[in-house]
Length: 150
Length: 304
Ligand SMILES: [Zn+2]
Image (cartoon, rainbow over all chains, first blue to last red):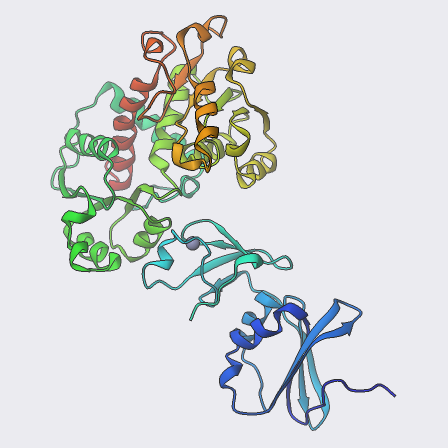
């Protein structure tokens, strides 16, 4: 029998296939520091798909679409599993949308969005190797330099 | 599509046909520079960062069209000193004027301005990002000196990494089946994003480190300034700056139709002994900026 490294939940959401190094980024981007129910997470778990993966389980939490988009920036291949009474009722893979508004800051320190109160807008150039083209300064922000905008 | 009431933020905002439309009308203004067609129109020139040359070129263009100019020449003299946001400045000035020409040190500022302004915006330079009217005047000049824009061999010399005029001119010329000869120090090569664009549009480019290796084969020699502050080691700069000084004797054996362009101001990359050569064309190039800006504004106002 397979041993569960991270305990199962009765109701809620499991985010699976997060790159291990990004588990804490996903926690931050979803603002889970302030989540008021059970959270279980693991990093460096074995995965056929990613080598090593991370996983986050949230009790009694179901996601809205814009929250899913946020996850895709740090975990473009993540699986989102909805659980009701220990049963999987829905399993979806996240995908980045064509455009991303807010969420990420433009990495270019000389971009107008970093000195005025302007909502960032990006065109997604690459959905897997996440590359975001700034609508304003036309520079490319990639996963090496993502900063979450507050 | 009509250019009426459109903003020009990035050279790619205009299609090839729209760019050619501006050039064609610029040829009219070259022959008929004074036209009373912007009566009762107010153009605001907002220079959040000083650039006397570009501002005077725009103001000359507006004056020759009979329009009025309001504005400021650097941010220290404006309400920005009092802490007003950029957004509020643009909103306010767009109520006072029919068109805003702006230069700003931050990249993306012109795009943002075009979203909050009620009147069209012409980007006269946003940081290291874009300077599309420079590109239009460069295209105009190439066409003027060569009689066409197609199938040109063009050498770009100097700082190809940070030079925004080079980036947008290369992109615009990708529509015209040109061959690019890129001459730069190794640390100031054309960025891969621009090379990607050259490859995408199936154009050819070659890279060199010496002007001498390419000067005899090209129709246009586009010189740019190498800025000392781009180098981490000042000794590297000292070595390189001397390799990119164009002197009159280097023009021996070059093509008859060769023209030397430079976005100006120059420091020392073109020796003054080149100025008297028939191949030197940078001052006429600057002059063309007025015609091109007249054409652009006329089209945006829909009066031509
Ligand atoms: Zn930006």
